[in-house]
Length: 332
Ligand code: BMA
Image (tube, rainbow, N blue to C red):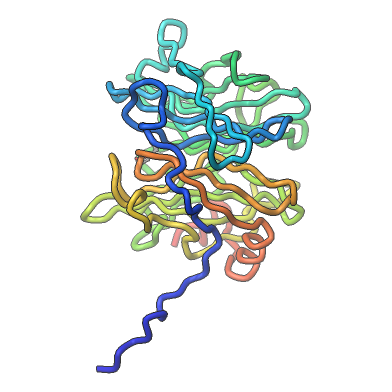
């Protein structure tokens, strides 16, 4: 048998892992915790990178804690106490913790909208809070009842309404939806916009938005996670889809291949192995370099860098039309 060349499995690399990964682990924390992962991210006005980290305590309950760094890589200053704790007395939906935040800066309000999973006896739902400084928060409560998660707001209104991307789960699957609101409290006009595929596909078991959609001249670029169920458990990987800029309900292109998946030890092994799960990114002043912060194996936080131009070029070259969530081509 001929030996295959050793480089026969080269695939395109759109995101490059940082050499200092993992960037943050439980041992960096100023108080005892189990794990730190799935952080939202934003760049503050003074250029500081802020990560709003999901921190799991040693009961298994999560809260959110801010870590700030001048260069987004090291020198993290972690809040000495939890930044946003569950408040089950006033918000029973937070009984078992708050998880997986996504941050959107909304210029019209001059505030950051933080959308997170609130977990209680009813199951995971979507909650929303507003903040100007990540020190005090105004909670708006549950905006999507269970079972729902993986939500993020778009940064401006669409046709006069706020828009939220989210992932309800039903007996019929876990797919990505959009909903609209006039006031951030009342949500409606729900529409399925991207479906999990079926069968052997990498994104067949369920899909969900990962970081907030990225607005580009070509449309809204979604990095979404797809889950495949195997005999050894789930594998969480990332894919790309491009939605119409004027009409974010319409998927223009969806990639067939995943673009990022667990490969390194810290992604393969941990409390939940084989998971890469980004909830946020920052964009460098060049307007193109994207720093994607991701939870690895539900245990630590890591960084991978890519180029928005590179992602758009890939989706134009490798993506195919996907008839939203409802068309026949949406279910293959
Ligand atoms: C998802 C979310 C994530 C988690 C992932 C893997 O359902 O709960 O927070 O990283 O599962 O466990």
